[in-house]
Length: 482
Ligand code: GLC
Image 1 (cartoon, rainbow, N blue to C red):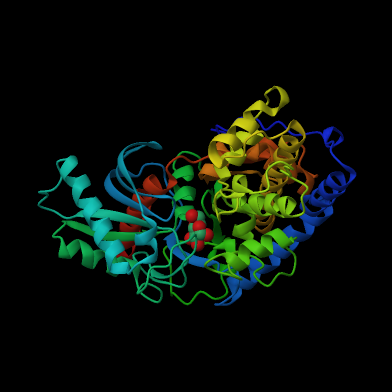
Image 2: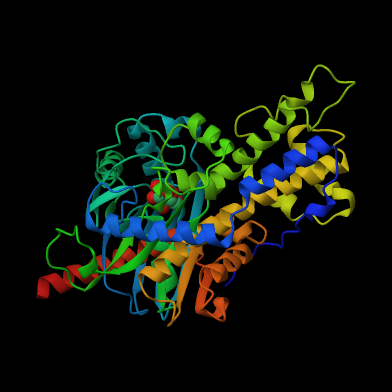
């Protein structure tokens, strides 16, 4: 399944009118945000170098974390599993029924994680999660189970795993900053909270969302090579040969392949190649994790709106946008001056605008940011800026896919890549723009869409966690009978 996103309607550069100063400004912005084919290739090449570094030694920027998920799926995996998904915008509890033959059913409940929980003590967050699991089990009539239910915990942060259900959080990302969690095992912290509440659940697998996405895609597409998340955050996982994981010290495995959680959001934190603009630097400096996750900050949903806002406010400050002689109080600029007020969802809607005189764009700005009476010239500028930021994200994201495919030598044979996340699913033309960049990066492939098959892996976090719990059981049996 391709993404469900609508088409983006791009603004022709020749249609950008305005004063000579405005035009000069727009020209400069277009230059800064446009990445040509040669530059894309350099980013991809550097990505491949960093992948190798990460496989060879601990502590590299792209962490390349062995997931302890060994071997491939058979597609016959079956059973009932509980899955928990923490790390995007919502917390989800999912009951997954794997039916074999790549089929599954899910029932789930969703709740928002408040900013207070994201920034407070980890104990409070775990207690909240345990409460959500408890409520879900009651709703599903599963609260009085004799046997403990197995739970796959999709915890989507950089965790250095030491077993399939053990690991240590190395740092928070995506706006989380709970105290008392870094350096600790998220499984033990959650298991304690479940015990405190007498919830009959055993956390049996710890999974990154990218690993889950890869597995859920592979459940019915055996040629799956990688899983990506392009949502609030951005990251990827792929299947690597054990012999290439130079830093592996985990002893004998049950297969010669293992899934690697790349943690590629941190790619190029050293700033060697990413085409960072002053708007990216501003965002980074003002974020709660400066100098970290630089690639993620250029390509994921949590940040794109803020980059766009940084350009818009710069234009406003230079009196090139929203200059209103009659309004000296600048009351209209209050909302857009607020950090994070320009959501990536607004960009999505603006990019899909095909209305006459940009009426829809004007309406979005009016309703959400109290920007009244936007002129058509201004609406065009704003739409163009959304397009530049959105397109750059898709093109840079494509570099990671090209790097994985080329690193694994999969370009000739072709492969499936499962992708989940709001940006990929809903952002206009995100997938088309990625394909376009992929064909520039790999011109030797004649039909890019048929060879590097991107597809929506719905509910990678839920189904993937259940599948990981299955693989965990299989590995345990293989070890017991070895
Ligand atoms: C962040 C996390 C990573 C996760 C990604 C997508 O980059 O560090 O673990 O996979 O977001 O949710």
